Image (cartoon, rainbow, N blue to C red):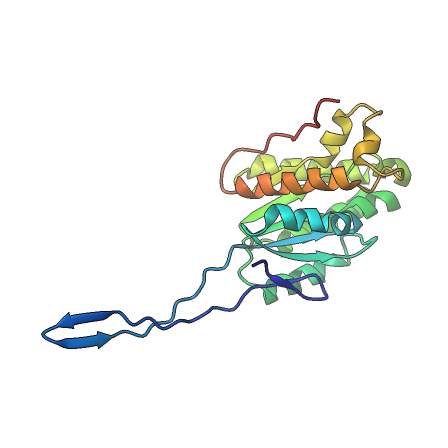
Length: 233
């Protein structure tokens, strides 16, 4: 049974269940009754952190990850990285241990534009906040956010993500949404992107969810996930 979700988007794991078992060992006509309590092992918890892109993909992410993982969602519409820092810290404190974090933030920072240094500073603080988590899945920012922001914030954040993956590939995994969209013919974009060129369609949500699952399954290895290619049109 999948975890029950609260109104804030967090997953609440099932409590341990106890049962009595009464095997009889007959030794010299003496019956020994054993009563024990066994806990049902919960799947490893994954915190999925993001903005409206994560909100749209939530059903597909849940479907892809459960029941292999216990999923907790933490997202806000139109949010930048900065306001999520305390929320992520509180979530990890409340829900320890968290085995992995999937992060899809930075798109709204790119849309807002401006100096990339501020967004990079907040991203680095986010990486510090999740420092105790042994697996971090990073999602690159689509190529059209910088067009709207008129800056290189998204590109700068994507470079930082790639640097982290190169430095510690066992801990960091990359879901390259940016690279996937760039690989598509412009005629194929409407299959995966809505008309605003920011939010994903249902097909895009399925791509993100499937890529998240592959990334999580490969945590702890030096391998990076192969990019999921669209079906031949």
